[in-house]
Length: 381
Image 1 (cartoon, helix red, strand yellow):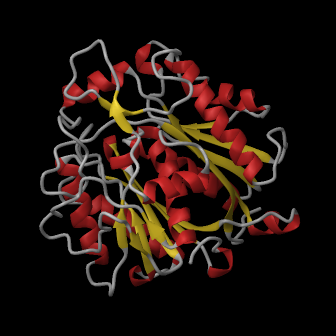
Image 2 (tube, rainbow, N blue to C red; image 1 turned 30 degrees about the horizontal axis):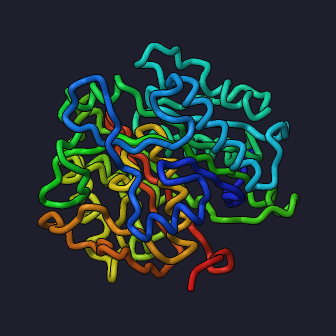
């Protein structure tokens, strides 16, 4: 049954290079902590820096097992946070990744089913593979399933792991920074790889009410667009990015000047940063005071297929706690970007709406509009 009932977020969890606990990780991020450190490699790379999840230890377990272990840990925590058991037959599961462990010799077709099975969830998940937007697109798919009446509760998110093939690939592509990740800074020269997982529990507001669930946030809308400009490079015009954001805001009927915070893709690569900065400037440049634009990749690395889900969790926490972390490495913002950026101590934010934006290889651009009404704010001063 098709429904206009709001889609709410009743639980969420993540596994990151600086920990798994939601509030502790956010505190660490806002304090300027970093998960990026040297990670030895037998290969010659542009940079040996990366951000790895502490357990299982990188290099001691094969990539497929790490993908399943990290994903299952975050998935089980999301079920628990929402007051659900993994075997609940009402729940559909949507899992996103980029290549997962496939590039290093593992078949990725069944990884999502193995993650689900490791938690005791019996149904076969929907798998989403849309490059770096896979985590965001899993939430978009879950929202569509709920709004279309195909599901009442979905647990959706992304998992991706660091592998030697990915490190070699991004080193060869030149997308890996030879120094450090500095999103939206004039000296930006590339990204640093990371890994992690995040899952969010989405359900209709009626479902949450009927089971007495706590509501963390509302997913007001999702918007997407594809520029099909190239395998790895975005359309320099930014039209597709602007379209994704405006599609999202238009679906929710929320004007741009009500957005308090934007979790940017912020890879630190030259063209991506320029396109994203110009696109955000076009959408929000006339807003007063305009949103605070922040990013977490300078601390957590770029976790590829997991990043959209991790950053959706971060957007909810930013709205809940009314603060965002600093943009690591930012000293001299790009010319033409007049939107507010957090300083070296982060920034306070005011408002209830936030956007999470992902820009994936192949032109997969996805935008999520999240709201944390004042009644749901927990820790804000």
